[in-house]
Image (tube, rainbow, N blue to C red; front, top):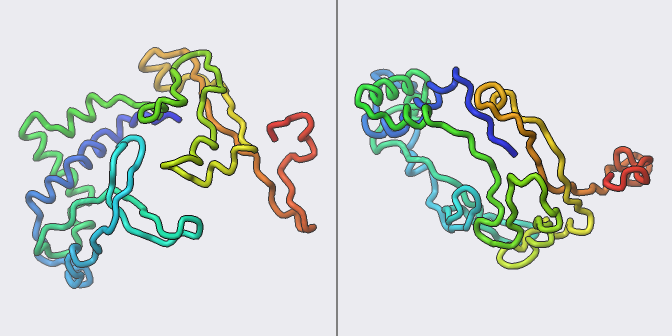
Amino acid sequence: MRYRRLSPGLVVLFASAMVAPAAAVAQPSRPTTPPQSAAALPPESQQAPPTDCTAQVGFAINGPLPGYLVPDKQLGTTCVPFTQVPLAPAGYQGDYRVQEFSDAAARRALAACEAKPPCAAVEAARTYHPVEFRKTGTIVPQGRIDPHASNVDLRQIRRPGFFGRAPYREPIAQAEHRAYTFEFTVPAEPYERLNRGITAPVKLRGWYLKGRGVPNGRGRLQRHGQQCRNADPGG
């Protein structure tokens, strides 16, 4: 999977969005006539219940996050982690999420940041470089491969069964018997070709999970293209 580079028209908005929250928290505006419904809202600290658990997450944080305990049919009770956002400043009047995160507010924050260089948001946009989601083996060495290699032994790549062991114990492990590890080649993206001079094709690797099918209205499950399964064992 590849992350696409932002188009030039989005760079300003990208940069302004990075500084808007910090600027808004530091110097929240006080509109003279906030919407009545928004002004009547209780503080966000009262609306957001405190978290009651933490859970380990993977790429790109690779660390613990706070979360909430929720019921799960398979796991009983499990912790669902999430990334928190700063709450509205105490005593803020109006709808903080609407007023301080509008396009106009973001542009004001960006202008204030640019007036006092160096502006971290501008530098981040200027030096932006797309990253690739290719971090297998960062935490557990098993399954580590060179993601940029032209030839990889697909048998080295982790399969669903790997995640049936502790500490994962994920339901995806049950798909081991119907999983296929595949590889295919795609051309470089237009941006890479036109602006970065990259012409080498890219190898994409992953799993194909053979589905059981969908009800066909006659009491049976049928997979798309099932009549051709002998010619294409992958389904």
